[in-house]
Image (spheres, one colour):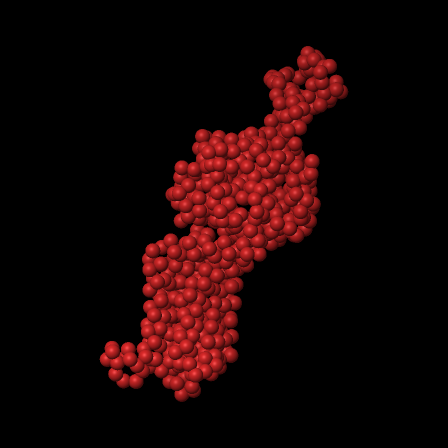
Length: 312
Length: 292
């Protein structure tokens, strides 16, 4: 599958401070999650892909087109829903969405038709003749989504799409994103620090930390592998237990304070772990079957980068 | 897709030419202006100077109607002074209109962070400014140089005898003088609109610009005993250029106190003002094109 977004040593600076540092990698999912703690560079990355910031070094390509050379063309292919409030308060919903669609290149009549459709689609059909300034927060989020999809972009950037939404509105938004993902040929990039949102929609994630790529993970592949593992909590462990488990043929990861994850091959039984623990005088206080969740992937990426940077 | 089918479908239709897409901004700018009934009424009223001038030209060439209206005394001369007076009045009336509604042009986009939505599309910052500029340019054109040329044509038609050829320079003066005024007014309006969210504050700042400049210039002239303080008064520079364009004779120009600085210096002052307005606009829009 052709990559949707490629990073080729992308670096963005605000004055002397590097905000995105030497990003390299490819993203090819239908719905890509952009994860990272606050201030990790998620919004900066989206703004750079939109051409608002010029790379100090390297570049990125969207659908194979360089963001520096084809910035204008790419903006026509992208729909953008920013994180904060973004609307023109004295326009009605339908005029606002139509205006944005026309700016993206749709002829006036088509833009009007698409504006009605997009507003009905996101659930604002009944209030489309009300001024956007009178909408509630949830309605404004939906109006932002409507203006982002009205012109039929190939790539949709959603920056914190569920920000400030109550649970029913959040569910509606997630449902819409999934429908959009499954409906056409549109790719979606969701920037969020809410793992649950990303987990429910995305098939690939890129994790940023301090402007670096902390990890790129194909969630779909992970889910397909459906790999179960054992989560152990031990007492008296001094790495000899983990070494012995690994010698047995298991994959083993330690997380400190006696916590570890063990991927058990089918040929090995749990009883053998207890036997090793007894030999090594290690108490197994807790043992659960689990699957790798997005939270685990995220935390692991954060810890790996932290260890690499020497900050943890 | 039909509105009742709530499923997403990509757009596969035609798109408008990329080059002229900024005109969408102009069109929606007009919608915004004429949404206000007050503005629409005021815009209609701004044609009063034109209608009055039209009537004066007609009366000046029609002795029968003058007699019917019992108008005695010599008729008004339709000359460069007449067109200068018309343009001055029309420009001020149209400026009042723009000072009231113009600040909404950009501040409306900045107030709730709509600018990133606009500039996140295939529209550059320059095209954005050009689109908004054309709103003001078109409105002021309709109120100033276009009626000015209509009056010129009327006068030429009624006067006959080759008047148009001997006064063709007057048509050029009307166009150049009006365009210069429109460019200054439009750029100042857009700069005020970009920097001040409140319409009243933005409108007030535009008037203040024309009052503070002369006051500062007068202070400089008094303290330094020079005439170069007039450079801080853009309105003075505009008047000076107009007097030069409309070929007002030297004694009359002196009577109008329009000989303080050379015309070239006045042009420079106008260009510097426009340059500063463009810099201010660029700085503000660049800072606000992403949501922070």
